[in-house]
Amino acid sequence: MTTWKKIGLGIGGIAVAGGLVGLIIYLRGLNQPPQVVTPSPTSTATPSTRTLGNEKFSPHSRAQSTANVDVGILTVRLNQGASPTPTAKADTVYLALTSPTPASPEQRQNPSQPYRTATPTPVPVATPPQPPPTFAPLAPPPQSQTKELAIVYAKGESGKRQIYLRSLDRDKDDQLVSSVFDDYGVSMSSVQQKVAFYSNEEGPSDSVKARTKLKVVDLATGKVQTLISNLPGNWPVAWSPDGKKIAVPTTDAIYIADVTTGASLQVPTGKNPGGIVWAPGGLKFYFQASAATDNNDIFVTDGITAQAQPVTTTKENERLPSVSSDGTKVMFLRQGAGQAGGEAIVVRSVTGTDEKAYPETAPADTYLFNLNLTDLVFVQGAKETRLSRFKSGKVQSVGSLTGPILVSWDRDYRHVFLLADDDQGKALFSEDINTGMAEKIKAGISDTVPGSLR
Image (cartoon, rainbow, N blue to C red):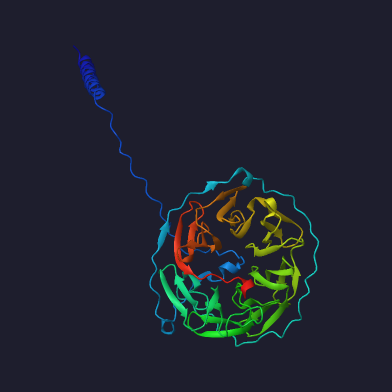
C-alpha cells in the first residue's frame, strides 16, 4: 500500500469516528428535558438624570394660579448670613403613574384649518395714565459662581406666606425673606439673580384700594428693596429677557420699570391686564386685558414707546398669550375655537396676517409649546382636568395627576413642571411627558387668591 493510500485511510477513519461521537451526543440529548430559561425581572422605571444644558426656556406667560412658584437658574451663592435658618430638607417622592393613553376618536380630529386674514380692532379706552413711579436703581447683576436649577415659591396660608428658594441640584431649601408681612407672587430673573415678589405690608388689596407693594430681593446679598406701591398684586410681574426691565400690571395699566435707572413708563390698558410675556430681544411684550365685560383681548406693547396695539380681532374671549422662541408666532386661548365652543389653543403670526386654531385641544387651559412648536403639552378638561399632549396630529393623556396646572418646561424638554393636588394642597411636580412618571419636587405651595377676591 502506498503512503498516500495510508494517509487517506487514516483521515477517513478519523472522520467516521467523529461522526459516531456526534451521533451518540445527539441521541443522548433527545432524552433530556428542555432547558428552562428563567426570565430576568424588568427594572422599575426611575426618573432620568437631568442636567442644565444650553437650551433656553421658551418664553411663556404665567397664569394667576402659578403666581406662587417660578423656575430659574441660580448662579450665585446665597447670602446665608442674611437668611433665616433653612427649612427642613423635604423628601423626594416618586410616583409611578399610568402611561399615556390614546385619545378618544373625537379627539383625533385633523387640526389643520385654513388660515384666515383678520382686521384690526381699536385699542380699548383706558383711564388717564397716572405719573409713573420712580425708585432707586437695583444693584447690577453679580458675577456667576455656580449654575443650578432652582425654584422660588411662596409657602404658608394666605396672610402668612413667606418666600423660599429650593435648589433642585442640592435638594435644599432656603428662606429668602424673613418678615412679618404676607409675601407672595414670585418672579425670578436668572440674569439679574433677583426675585421680585408682592408684599401686603399695608394689608391686602381689595375692591376699594390697591395696597400691595412690589419688592425685590437680591440673591447675592439678601437685600430687599421696595420698587412700587399701591398695586392690586394679583398677576405676577414679568422680567425682560435681559433682566433690565419689569412689566408690572396694575388695575388698568402696566408699568415698564427700568431697574437700571429707577424710571418707569406707563402703558394704558383695559381692565385687569395680566398674562404678560416678553418677546425674544426684550423690545416688546404681549398681555391680555379686558376690552369689555367678560371679553379679554390680546395686545402687544412696544417697550420703548409704551404704546399698546391689539393682536386679536374677534369678539370671543382670548387670554394667556405666549410667544415662540424665534418671536414669529404668538399663541393664546380663544373661547369658542374648540369643540362644543370651549377654549382652544390658537397660533397666530405676529405679522397679523394668518392664524390657526386647534379645536381638538378644547377645553384647554394652561399650555406649553416646545422650542420649535412641534410638541404641545396642555391641561384639558372642564370639571376633571388632565395633562394632555398634542404631537403629530394626535392628542393623548399623560399621567394621572389631579388638578394639573402647567408652570414651565424642565431642563430637557421631556419633562414639565406643573402644580397638582396632593395631601398638602398644591405641590410642584416634574412629569415625564413620554411615560407619565412624576417626581414630587416641593409640597405645600401656597394657593393663589383669585383676582376677583382682591
